[in-house]
Image (cartoon, rainbow, N blue to C red):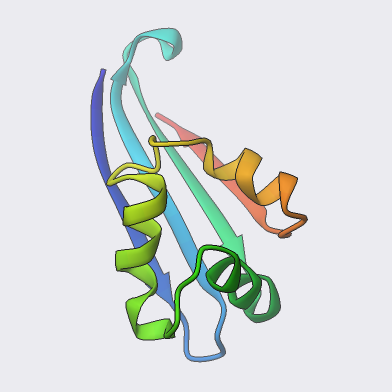
Length: 94
């Protein structure tokens, strides 16, 4: 398996999409895997506050610092769940 980089999109309305890709994943028969966490503005702001990010324009840097370049330093989904930060998870295997 080859880990891809985290991707991050902050939208004008304050919402954000955060995700990662893994390539040639053995458990999926060598397919690629993508996971995207979709946050509304309220929950994205809650995430930034919880990780200590002072400004939205520093969000990507702080997320990478806390969760790693591929969101693999600690479980991103579990962290959000444990802190009651709501998101929609979208996955793709192909």
